[in-house]
Length: 563
Image (tube, rainbow, N blue to C red; front, side, top):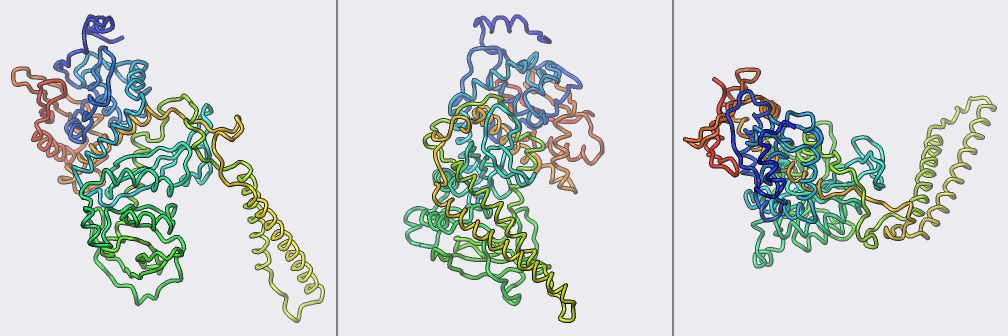
């Protein structure tokens, strides 16, 4: 339907011809053609790097390059899922790729399934991560690590429950552990169907990978000469607080930065001094900071830096980075909002949480997967429920007010009866909690997945296709960020840069190929106001300086606006 190269398609289906040649035709008012403005950034970030090495497609009409470009353009155009392509004009999207039309949803899903086989998406993502770190080693010296809960609303897979902070509910979900730079740009993601927590993932999977990938680490001789020197810093929230983890990472010469989970009493206000601090965004602000050395329960000596706010609240952070000044440690911890903003933005604009495949499968190697024992969970729930009842009774005792000495004897007797009744209930609840806790100690907290009853065993959604599309979304986010930084050079309101890019990606444009000059001119239609057009003209100048060649052609892209 809608195809014009019917002969080529028939020949490709019979194996007589290879992939279709990319051939652009003059086209005016092409829907969504503004997304071609992102092509230089996508290629620079690495969309097509290592794809020939990692992926193979069977012989057919569509090139692998066209499939990757289509998926990246769909992400930037805010098409929420593959099925969204069903409601777009296939011929218009085909003009953007130099084809007669883009594949149908069913065909595209088959291509994605073939590309996502095995560990190819994970290997491709790892190679891109190494490339990004080598290209900007200064961004890999301090890394944010945090878990993002992906809620599952389907019925096919049986996932464990996780607490979803944004909804304040325990829902069936899986957890992705993301590693981001200080400006929020992603490096890689570790998906976990059944998570043992941030501490285990950091120690078992993230840090070993960073030890291999982070560039410019000090040599063994340099580390031996300076016992306080570290390789790099990992930054996480209170979920990762563990003095034992700090010690083990310190032994590997990896520094930690996190909030103090159990801070002591407030420090004297006289200890705090005002410092000019440069935030990750480049903004310079004043902070009142103080620092002490503290010894944790495992005898590890760490730095504690506190920030005093105008309201008098003190925020405490701990670090095993013994070299960096406190004026750099504090903004590094407080700039964790960049990773939270990444989660929020990609959820809303790149459909980070959306299901890609709707099939469930068994979790491999269930004998190695640790889960909470159902008996332990049941006892623990009873303990927590009873503890809540006890807390409410204690609050009621504390709220009792003794009547004055001049009160009537009836009032005094009523008070004594009520207090005696509450005291008895408190004593009974305390005895019950002690009994429940002793029973809980007799049950092992964890077991393996294979030992659970068949009806209670967890399953998972197929992860391969999501890993592939998540990597493409990371590339798209990085490309958009690079374009945003260019636009901000000409925009007075920096926060509007991403909104302007979203408008560019969905704006019509004229496509004018010139085979004699070997150019492909992309002329964007005007936007809503003059200031936006001025910023876009500046973007065109920067993009034209890259002299980008459209993949699989010899056409150089020339960007401009309709006169």
